Image (cartoon, rainbow, N blue to C red; front, side, top):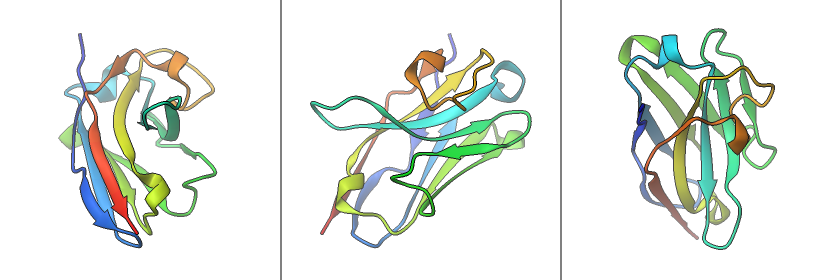
Length: 126
């Protein structure tokens, strides 16, 4: 069972930045895509960014487009989520996710995901 491990969450003021990291050993040859989701209590999990492992093509939710950037460093077995100009509404638990099957969702839909991380909390204060 592959288990992504997230880090980098924390508390920041509005307008600030954070970079989340997700380590998953061997992901570059065992996954089709990697994604970042977020969830607040009482709401559905939202796929905010995804990246295709082989091509590095990316996809973003409209709510984060232009502010968040997903990237990967295969040599370090790590996927990143750079979050800039953070807003209070970005406050959520952020999850790294991995998909092994070919899909058109860039790992931004839960049904494309085979492995989930435990999550890291991001809190943005106004």
